[in-house]
Image 1 (spheres, rainbow, N blue to C red):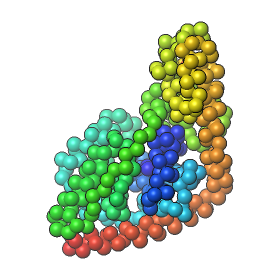
Image 2 (image 1 turned 90 degrees about the horizontal axis):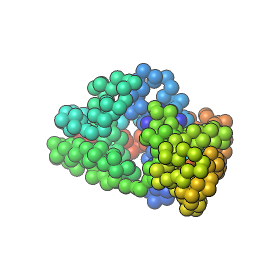
Image 3 (image 1 turned 120 degrees about the vertical axis):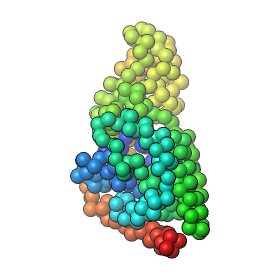
Image 4 (image 1 turned 180 degrees about the vertical axis):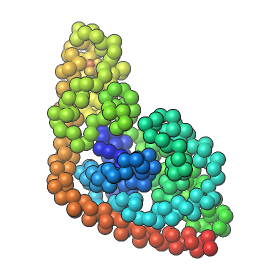
Length: 317
Ligand code: SF4
């Protein structure tokens, strides 16, 4: 995960809940991908280390357990870059230029100049991130499948050129995650300023929920609403599924107004966030400990990474 700012509900539902569960059945390695963040934030690089620490705090507060899993900062393990170099040499330019996410991001992110050599090659660094640990599986969303396929292609090309099975095929662990839109009905993203953050206070959550866009056809409290067309209702399905049928009824029969409906929703979101907030507050008091956890994680990651790099160098030379 790239540390580019505060984590929000989208991260919690789209990744962290799933990762926390995976710790029970896999040896997990979680990387705070600060070099990936640098590719887009190279002009604001001073904040990245702090964002990395904040990210570790959020992860641990959400249940990532440093006793069970390895968590570390990517830039503490330089082997990522060494492997990227080897893989870059054999990755055809066309594979990178065809990457649909690359084109999409160039189109959508206009506040930064992403027409750089590093950004074009970010899938190669992603491949290195996976292959360095000879991962059996990566938990991803369907939209990331092309990246994993590219990683597999690169691994096969390496094995084929150097006639050695250094890298195995890595499978995707596809998980159904509820799609949560931002407050303004666009994708939830820091750059759109439409997020509910894991570190938001109760009052901030309430204020943000009240600002959410609702069913545009419900102009007055007496107008029946269309819950399926309202983002607030989709939040009910995620944060208060037991109350969603009731919300459907009060909305479609105009029994309750949108402000009440939203205030009620914010209570449910706050209830879910409360334990995370509490743990977060404790962890924030001791950032040195978080630094230590990341350092220890990097040491463990390096043991695996160095072993792989030895095999890579032996295959190449
Ligand atoms: Fe949306 Fe609730 Fe208003 Fe219905 S009552 S339109 S679900 S905010």
